[in-house]
Image 1 (cartoon, helix red, strand yellow):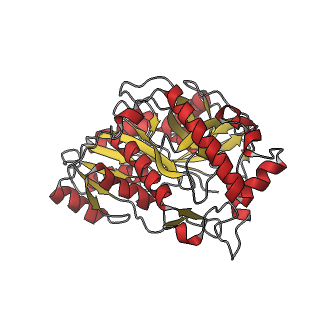
Image 2 (cartoon, one colour; image 1 turned 90 degrees about the vertical axis):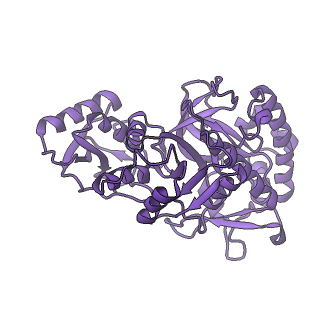
Length: 433
């Protein structure tokens, strides 16, 4: 552990500390954020004191990403939740802007330090240690991944940055520089297994003993993880963050029983019903949408921010000694489809389809017939076969039956020849509208 005293602190004691920071953060928002001052006053909270502490946080309004985006102007492209002067900002990250203008994420020096500290704890939980070598495949560029890469220095690792889309360079680095660990998206880790097999590169015999995956759901899926571990001959652990709140907020230890909150002290997590917004008690096995609140943020703090990550949570002790809450990401609520009232996550479909390996490759693509979330059954799913496997009606029917049994929806399975579905050197797209 990087911070043994903090990471093993009893959670009740942590909540007492967080409550004090939270109350200070509310005062800060009322004083410096016109966005939150107006939002809270319109919700009936005339002062920070009237909002109470963490025990009462559930009565405050949730924050949607679109609300923040709507306040952005040419004069203030960050939005009206910006709380600091231009001179105090040391870093501005941005989102990809796939739905329009990018969102900008400013950080003060203390914000950046807190991000790197939380990310360092999250990645260190996987078992990597100072003096080891790690190869990374993320392109920092304008994105928050840059702060995640800075955590490698904080841990004391020898960092070998390669970036996205440089598979030949990556494999040469693994072959010649003998890194102990590699960090990448689960989709890319999966793609590299196939790439190595086609070129007779001994991935299992390489120096890599740990693969740290992040950037998308999948690393925590039991069968998908097993495939990655067998292909790499390495332990696979996952990490998760959300750009608006912090990079690599959560990280999984070697016991692989959910991701620990590495950003404790800086972020408060909640669980809500994604449809009603009501709080769900944080207890072992509970599921819902993850909501996050900054506790000690300066530049553009967020209060009860909807992550759109659908998670399963745990609060009990972990064998590693860490006492923080744990999560496993099931999927993105904005990727979720509803088939006759049943919530269906593409990552859950992939998990079920993986049961049919080695007859299938593990690659899937969901192709909804209608626009929007609600879909009429059967839901079309394209499933790629393994090499030299011939399309078989019995196999397709068996997969359809298993999906109906496990996920309680009706699917129309189309089996495709091996190689028909696109591979990714970053994130896989599981749904094509």
